Image 1: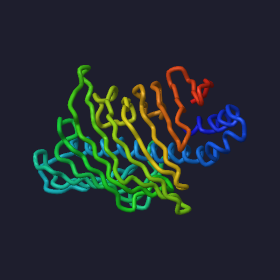
Image 2: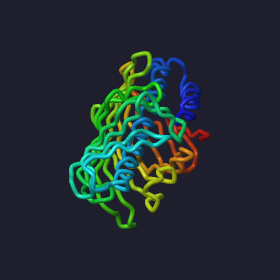
Image 3: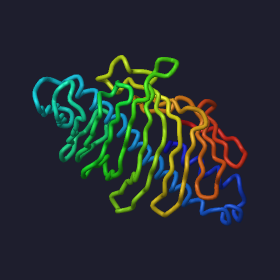
Length: 270
C-alpha cells in the first residue's frame, strides 16, 4: 500500500481547491496517518503469518521429551513446552535474540510468546500471541494477537478469525501508532506445504481501526476480500474502503487498479 500513498496525496490536492482541503482536513496529516497505517498493518499481518508458521513448525518437531529448544542457523530459537503431541495448552516461544535477518529481508529481534489451545489445523484451536521487547526492523510491537481456527468453509479452505487488541507500534523516534483488528483470514493456497509459509496465499475480510501518532483516527473496511500473497508480498485482488479523519470516500480497487477519491477515479500502480 505504501506505493499508493503518494498518488493519493497528489489526487487529493488535484480533486479539491486549496480552501476546501484546508477546511476539510490538513491533507498532509491525513496522508501521514495512511502511511503509518500501511506500516502497522504490514507488521501485524507479518506477525500472524510467522506465529502460524511457528505453531506448524512446533507440530512438525513435537516429540516425547518434556521440553525442547530448537535453533535454526537462519532463524530464531523456538521453545515448546510441554514438548509432546497431546498436552495442551502449549507455550511456544519464538526468540529472535538481538536480531535475526529472515528470508523476507526483515530483521526481527526480541520474543514472541504464543499460547496454543491445540494445533493450528484443529477446528476451535486458539493461538494468543504477546510480545516481549519485540521489534520488526526499528518498530517496537505491543498488544495481543488472537487467532481462532473456524474450520473449513464450503470450498474446503480453512478460515481463521483474527483479533488484535491494544496493538501499538513505537517508532525509533518514540512516536506511537495504535491499531485494532477484527477480521477473517481464509487460507486459499499453501496449506499442503505447512512448513513453508512463503507459498501461502489468503483472503482477508473485516475491519481495522487505528490512531496515528498525531491523533488522527482512521478505519478500513474490506468491501471485497483482499487476496494476499506472501512472496513476493502483494495484494492480488479485492476492494478496500478507507476513512481517515473527515475524508470518508477513499476506495482502493485492486481488481481494476483504480483508486476512487471524492467520487473521481484514478489509476494506481502496485
